[in-house]
Length: 189
Image 1: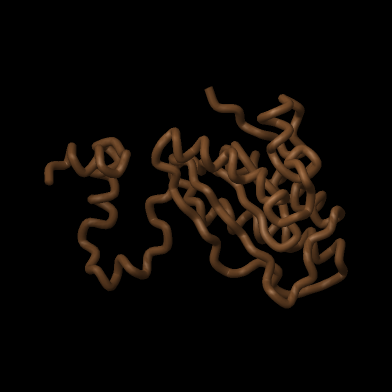
Image 2: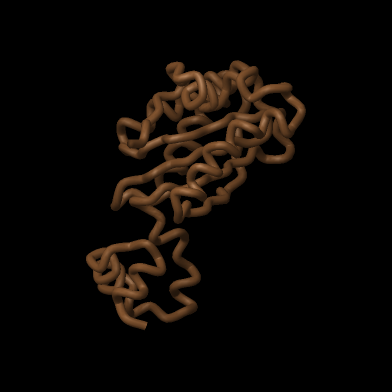
């Protein structure tokens, strides 16, 4: 397979290919397995974070603290946020971390900041979020648009509301009513 074919298959430019090859090209398979999300930057990534099982579910006040924590981290780390939803036991977002920031570093910053804020509001201590996050790179426009539509439907699927517009803790109003989002949003196009 040629470099051009590899780049086309993975949706990267040849400069990125050669940069990654220089950085990671000598790794053995066993070493590469220890790398966590080494390439996930400069692309839209669908992420899911979950509250640890023994923790109480998030409340309205917790959602406000979570939104504030995310808003504080965004200017420092300069990642784009194009869709989101907060639910009682987890959250979803589409984030685009600019190189060299990885999705792991961006989400660690948000999780640590939100954990501190949530602990202060709840008067609790200890881990709050599951250690790992679930992520998926969105590779096509179709996949991106399907995910933007999927995210705000979560409260409806969970039986929390009958319509996505009834749940204030998502990007639905931003996209479908053109309202200002509780979280600053980045509009594409």
